[in-house]
Image (cartoon, rainbow, N blue to C red):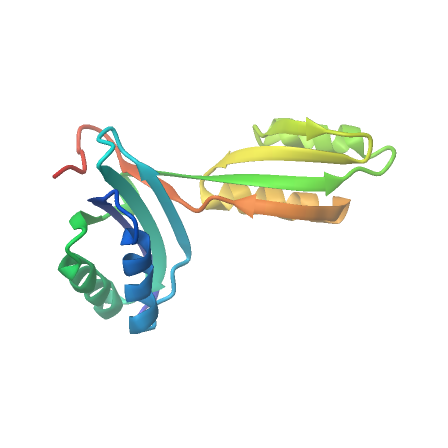
Length: 166
C-alpha cells in the first residue's frame, strides 16, 4: 500500500503524563512520529497536539483507533492536507566566513526569514513556513557551514470556520 503523510490534530487533557501515553502508544505499535507539536489552548485545562507520521490507510486507521482509546484524548481529527494551514519553525546557525555575509542576508530576505542573532562569526536565522520552504532554506544554507539547527515540527489548523473543539 502507498505510504502518505498523516497529520493528526487532537485535544487532550493538559495533565502530567499525557504526552508519554500518546508517544508510548506509537512506540508500542511500532509507528514512527515524524513531527510532534504540543501547546496549551485557550482553555488551560486542554492542550492541542499535532502529530505527523507516514503510513498507509491501515496504519492511519490503527493510529486513530488506538488514540481514541486513551482516556486523556478529548477529540482527534485527521487534517485534510488541502484545507489545512501548516507551519513549521526552523532555527539555523551558520558560520559566517568573511565576504559571505551579504549572500546569506540576501537569501534570508528572499526566503522571508529573520536574523535573530548576529555575532562576528555566526548568524542565527529563523524561517517559518511549510516544511518544503524550511527544507529549501536549509539546503541553500548548507554550503555556508550550518553548525546547528532546531525544528519545531508541524503545527496545523483548518482553514475557514472549521474548528477542532470538544
